[in-house]
Image 1 (cartoon, rainbow, N blue to C red):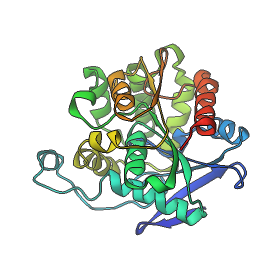
Image 2 (image 1 turned 180 degrees about the vertical axis):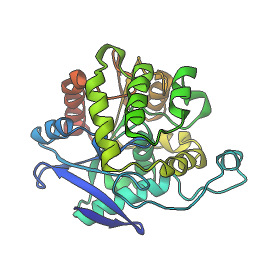
Image 3 (image 1 turned 60 degrees about the vertical axis):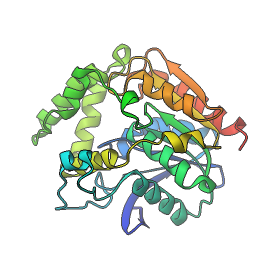
Length: 288
């Protein structure tokens, strides 16, 4: 099992493609295991000449779990308590993985919370980042970190402990905030079942939530970025409304914005060719 020591923890990771090709680091979103970057998606990027690196963030999947560390989300949100880690910690984890693999500089892409992490990585470690792609994410500013009420309710619904209930929740949630034109119940159920079987660890979700709340917004840092940036967002996204992506592109100097009408808060397979083309073109032609 490929494990990298990084930032005092261990990260499970996988690679696709030729290590001699330019490195492309993919960073998962909230509660998402490495399975969130589908094999076919990663292979499509690798076939286009990228050395694709993906991994489980801390507190999810097969990477280190910080067992037993409780968080008070209300106190963290009020600024009266500290979180065990924040987005800068996640970013440093990713840098440590690059160190382990001997990668000096990588193209980086993240979805949802992963988009927040790669934004922070570009702010904190610009010398390690060739280009940035932020997918269905936002800046951390409250005015641009909004969800439709039904999407937030789905996200905050209790995590079932039974496999069948876990799968049912995943399917029903996808109908609320996923790409409605492309929802495939069987595919969602298969991925949810695989995630449950690989590592069911709901305890980590509160700590990942705390990391987001403790990090504040990235507006000032994004305004100063000199990293070539692509922002991808779906107009059908109800979990992080389109304004989140639009604001990200507005803040980063020279950023390109790709808004997809039929995309929600997921990566539907019919849109992979378009998204892969955009990411490859961005990382090939951006000057930085």
